[in-house]
Length: 161
Image (cartoon, rainbow, N blue to C red; front, side, top):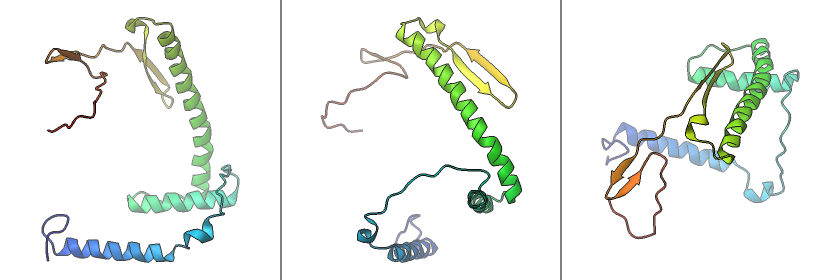
């Protein structure tokens, strides 16, 4: 009976009750907090040549693939993909960091807006495109000039909509 999440009751209430029962069951399976208080978690380095790492990544990616009706990957494909991801992450991260640092130099030197650049990069093509950012349009409301980047300070007084 009664109104659940959708207000219609019935099946949604049953689903919510079932979810709550399952979550309670999962919570009961957890060890008491006192028994894990001394446990420390240590990160490990991913190694695409370690069979245990590839097995884990393959299992996780195939679980996700099942959720989204995507074709599953075997261990060989996972290893090939993993071997390409790490260098791609390092390359793209260093590229973006370099571009950001160039813009920071301009900011510190108080250069005009026209000297700044927006960068668009696609390493797969490869494509590097740059454009000048536009000044945010300004608006006025009750003698207050503001734009998309303006900051509003709230002084703690009660606000209503």
